[in-house]
Image (cartoon, rainbow, N blue to C red; front, side):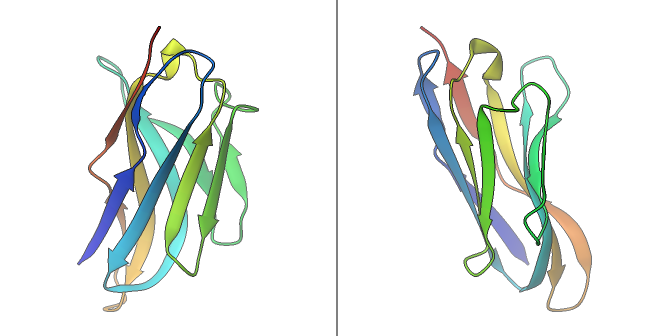
Length: 120
C-alpha cells in the first residue's frame, strides 16, 4: 500500500505565500509524475501543477508565474511554492502521484487534501 500525506495549508492574506509539501511512503518501486490539484466549493477538481520524474513541469494558466512545483526523487516528496496568493486560490489542495508499487502495479494515489484559504 502507498500513502500520500500533505502538509502546509492554512489561512493567509492576499499577496502572501504558502509552501505545500507532500511525501509518499509505503510499497514504492518508482514514482512517475507527481502533481497538485485543487477543488474549490462547487467546482470540479483541477490540475494546478505537475512534474515528471525527469523534472518537466506543467502549470495551470491561472498560477503560471506565481506557483512553483518541485520534487525530491530520493525522498519521494513534491512541494508547491505558492506566491502572490489570491482569494480565487482558495481551495482544498490534493497531492497526486502515479506510483509503481513493488508488486509492479501502477496507479494514481491521492493525499487527503489540505485547505488553503486566502482572505483578508
